[in-house]
Length: 117
Image (cartoon, one colour):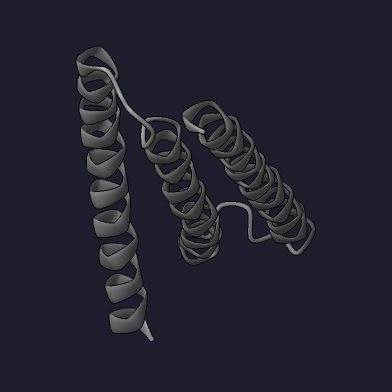
């Protein structure tokens, strides 16, 4: 029974990782299109346009980080070894730190843009 559950969890983790990759791909495409539009409109050096692009792209990356962490948790949910728990703790700490500081940067940029408006 444990092997069936482990196999199911593996498929769920793989699907979650696929969503993570799709988030990054979509975010990259959206950011690239926005950069091209800004350049075409002559706003390539405009800080406001760059901040807007960053905020949108960062949102996709933050979402991808959440899915990546979820996939790691699912992978280690069924009878983990101490080694797997240690690896998950390290990965979770790194991803949570990245997510925290990226969110903080997005919030600061949004506040700066709101103050300019």
